[in-house]
Length: 279
Image (cartoon, rainbow, N blue to C red; front, side, top):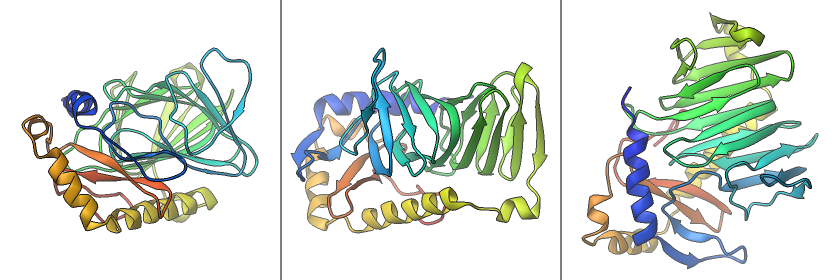
């Protein structure tokens, strides 16, 4: 399998060193334009959520000004939800009473470990973009390889459920390909079963599904509201002999919109879209 994310990582890493633009736009001192070589930016927090740094014993309150580092663990309470920036243009949304570890925050070997609870991944990109987002749970390991919409439910000591509404996942141990419309249930001992979602399962959406869609619509709106002068400044800033080599069709950058208090993704080329619809 080709790994387009490796090429993305290289260009993003060099771009981060040479052409990142540290313009502060809010009291939270978040950068206006960010070309990042790492995942882990916190894009939304509602309700109770806490973070524990790698090797730390104490939990601290999680805020939207933080960038998670490798080994950081995040948990939510009864009313907590969190949105995390993954690879360029992709988001992970953690539900209530859930916990995950950012095992590796590099784009080349991005890995998220869902320890318990529920996480939804909105993965954007062009139709032929080949991705590499590693997801592990206490029961299995899988790799998201295509744009799509994925839900992982983990019951510790029991099972992991993967629902692929759109997209494609490769199961690490068996090289099994899971496509949109499939559901996989994993249990201990590497056992799993694959089945098609029935009509009721396709229509069965809970409050986390609704929140994820609302967030997707909001970041899309934030994208459409980027001011033309900012785009002009961005274009001018990137129009040099260094950046011309970085703008592959898989590339882009996170743009912070202070009016919506969130990052939205701005690709360098057309053809990108969200599994929720729109581009």
